Structure formats: C-alpha cells, structure tokens
Image (cartoon, rainbow, N blue to C red; front, side, top):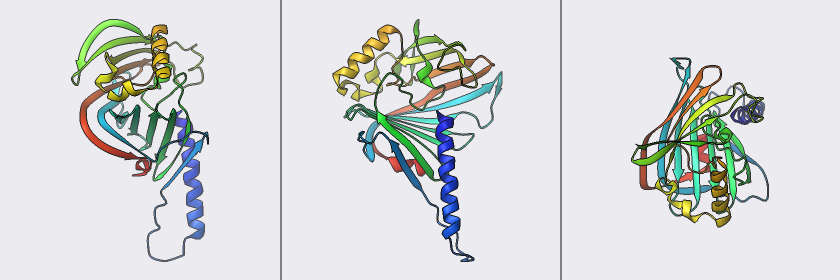
Length: 263
C-alpha cells in the first residue's frame, strides 16, 4: 500500500514541477516558490475534518535488519495520537530511507478513515468509509495481514502499560501476501491488555464497532484500532523489523492539521 501511494504522489510531484517550469519567469534571479499541495480523493460521501485534536501520544521507532545486519537509515519514526474526548486516532510515520511521510486518520464518530502520503511538499491521499474488516493503517509490517493472533501467555509492562504477547504465522500461500516482496513468517506482537490504557476515547465508539471488535477478537483476528506497543517481525528471506515504544505522553492536548504532512 505504501508503494502504491508513493507512486501516485511522485506522479503528482512531477506534474506540478512541469507546470511550475512552464509558468516561471526566466532569469528572475529569485528562487521559485515551493508549491505545497494536498489533494484528497476517494468516497465523496465520506465526511472528514481538516484538523483533529488529540491528548495522548505514543512515540515509537522501527529498525530494519537484513539477517543480523542493521539497515543504515532503514526503519521509521512513528507517532500515534489518541483522543480521550472522541473515538479518533492518528498515525504519523516517517520513512528514514525515503523521507516519505505517511499519515492515517481513523474517526469512529464520523465512520471515516483517511490515508495520506507526501514527499517533498507534495501530498495526496484517499478517504473512505471506516470498516474494520480490511482496515490497513500505515504501520511497519502492514499489520492488516496479522490474522489469527494467539496469546502466548507472556505479559510485560511497556512504557507503563501492561501488555500481553500474541504470535501469528502468515505463510507465503496467504492470498493477501502472494504478490508482495516477501511474506511474513512469524510476528510477535505486544498489545495493551486494556485498550483504554492508551486510547481513552475507545469507550466512546459506536456500539456496532465495539460488537464487531469483540467478534473479531473471539475469531482470533486483530482489529487495528489500538496499535501494538512492541512488535517483532521475521520474514521468510531473513529480513526482520523491530518496532518499539520510546515514550508515551498523556494529557497534552494538540491540534493536528491534515496539511501538517507537508511540513
């Protein structure tokens, strides 16, 4: 998904640069202005806000390894924002290797989701009706593939939050990963035991979402609503991705603008 979004934004960036060159005065001696653009496509019936307020922030980092070698400039910097006053959250991910920013907004009140990606001041994305089945927030390892998670019984406290470990095995024949570069073999995922511990607004979700989440959990799947606080992915080709939480900041209200992706 990240690659598909990035292709669209590179095309948009190239088009904008061509238009700028065609209209820019010759030999002015002044640098051309940066054209920061945000274009949102998708379902026109879906309503989204231009800004959201959150008061919980989970800071994370991911590291990539090829075998035992750490990939220099690999991995991502991640911030996950949650609200205590509304059923909404946001994930902001920055790729260290490409400089591309990925933002995801989930609003259970408006039943909407928005995926954005941007590079070099050009960004665009798609809005859609929020549906838990098939929901794929931007996050290391494409967590939507993590089905049939099983509890290992292990528990530990991460950044002050009690978590329990789940393990998932996704083999190459999984239809959702057949066309990817490499399928996940094993995923070790540490999830908060109480979702309210990081997402206080969780209790404000409409009842039909709560019921669906409970059914998904009973069936063994993972509704990507509260992100893991730690995750270790082992791929079939020997690659590994380790994502961990560095700190959690609570009760610090901040407004996030959609246009922040171009900052």
